[in-house]
Length: 225
Ligand SMILES: [Fe+2]
Image 1 (tube, rainbow, N blue to C red):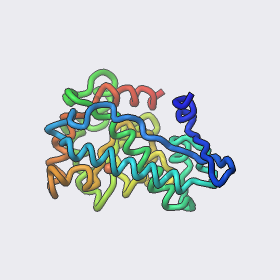
Image 2 (spheres, rainbow, N blue to C red):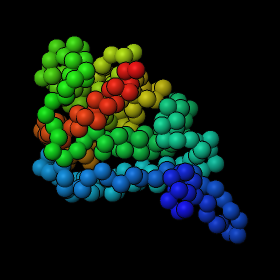
Image 3 (tube, rainbow, N blue to C red):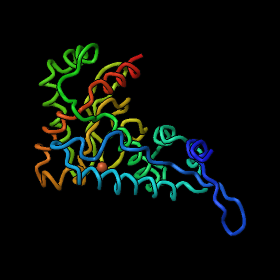
Image 4 (cartoon, rainbow, N blue to C red):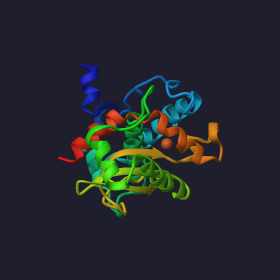
């Protein structure tokens, strides 16, 4: 009963003797142990990243949407509806929630390697080779000034590399390049500083060791229909 209630993304709280419905975005469990991506991503970084940063985006989002139309939306619909007029707290924390949930799921222990099948063929077709794709993706992630994300997206059935500032993402109508993300990497310092300090390129090199290409291929197939 309680589980179903939470799954519906709503909780009802008793406030000053009256029932008040409050939108509740919730944090799914991390799909692996925090140490599972060692040594590429260390346990402490994962614990803080998932347990504090991601959690804080959700807490702040839940506060920001109270009484707003966004409180009744799924996180997908919320992100796809963000415009220049959207309150910054909803844009930043909504993006932060979506992006981190996505990020945990395109990584997995004992993964890495190379994509296969149709995804591999599409990468070769668009970028020349897998190595060339990795170079271009790394360049997008390295050159993103300050905090943000680099993405591989499907746009008009083609693969495109792009990046977004802060917690924006390519699903948002405010993004310079819009499309459906199938791979993304967090280049906020909180994602890598404990282990890699200012060496973002080293973190990006290690990221390939934990990419779950099976998941990326699944997302590619869904976005290419
Ligand atoms: Fe992050």
